[in-house]
Amino acid sequence: QVQLVESGGGLVQAGGSLRLSCAASGRTFSSYAVGWFRQAPGKERELVAGVSRSAGNPYYADSVKGRFTISRDNAKNTVYLQMNSLKREDTAVYYCAVSTNWYLSRRPQDFGSWGQGTQVTVSS
Image (cartoon, rainbow, N blue to C red; front, top):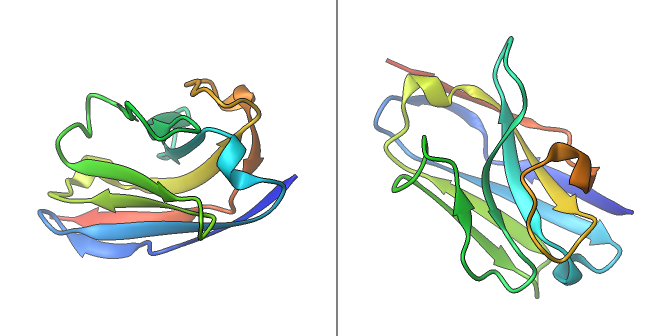
């Protein structure tokens, strides 16, 4: 099991930026794919960005392409989500998660470890 602690959420005006961090401890973080999910009230949890073990060919949801960047630092057991040009519709609780596989899946059930979530609120 991997323990995950997120930070960096908050309130930001539309057009602004935030950087989320997720520090991992426990089993080998570098061996697994990681992702950032978000869940807005009344909506399903969705994968917004993710990378495989090798961090090649990251995945981005269409709604965040060109604005969000995921990165991982295996030496620090940390994954980041840089969010630029934020929009009101980005408002949600953001969760980092570690997969049970080395490859990236978009399904929440393929992620075995989850952070507690951090609130991101974008105001107009």
